[in-house]
Every structure is written in structure tokens, then in C-alpha cells.
Image (cartoon, rainbow, N blue to C red; front, side, top):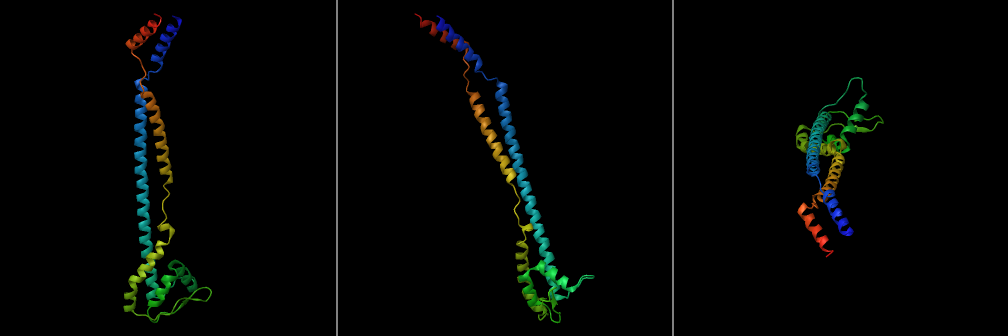
Length: 210
């Protein structure tokens, strides 16, 4: 009799204790939906940052290519000079911008009568011109190609944007969603017993005495 009473009380407690309020389950569902929305928005922002960075790099390469081409054509067709700047410094600075391969081609196509230009140590940077306009026009595509290669080597125009923070955020959200799913799965297991079920179990337990 005493044992049966204890079992009945335990079943009654189990019935009450295992019931999960609907509000709790709904809160978990709403939380998971918020995680999904946050992840979607963060992915859109990641794509936006990547696209803007790529567009910036494209414009940077375009502008640098135009500037370098203009500088190369100046040396190929004229004898550039700057006010208040020594000729050797002008040749040195422009040589650093253009690079050895571009300068080598400029020296092949410099127009006749253009004088050589030396750097600070006395070395010839731009050779005396020996070419003509026909040669310059023929070599122009090659000059553009070398300049594009030079610009492509500049890390400011090709460096990849760091998007690891967005990837880490997505990883963290997915981990939280897995935890949320496990909790929801546990709470969805409805162990609540109806009054009739409890009564039937009680009668069954009482029947054990007979």
C-alpha cells in the first residue's frame, strides 16, 4: 500500500515536472529564426565588403595604369623636367615608379634627339633617343602590357580583403544554433501524462496488491 502510494505520487510529480510551457518552446523557435536572420544579414554585408573592395582595387589598377602609361610616354617622347627639382632626382624617382622592364622598353622607343638622363650616382637611366614614331606606335601594345604587369605587382591593387571576421561570426552562429536545436529537441519530447493515464497507472499499481 505504501509502495503503491509512493509510485502514484511520483507519477503525479513526473507529470507536472516534465511539462514544457509552450511559451518556452516558442521563444526557442523565435531565437533560432533570429540567428538565421543575423547570419543572412552578415553574409550580405560580407558580400558587400568584398564587392566594394574588389571595385576599389579595379579602379586603383586602372588609375595607376593610366598614370604610369602617361609617365612612360613622356619619357619616350620628351625630356621631362620639373621646376626646383634636380634632373637626376626626376630621373631617379620616375625610374622607381616605372621599374626596370618598362624603362628598358622606353629606351628602345625614345625618339631621336632626346638626350640621355642620369641618376644621382651618374648612371644612365634613360638612354639617348634613337627611335621614331612608327617604332613607338608598334611597341605601344607591349608598353601597355608591361605597365599592366608592373601595376599588378603592387599589393595595394591586388591584396585580398580580410573576411575572416565574417567567417568566424558565421561559425559561431552555427554553433549556437546547434546548441539551441539540441535544447529544443529535448523540450519537444512530451513526457506529460494525461489524468486518465495517471489514473490507469494508479489502478494498475493498486491491482498489484491483489
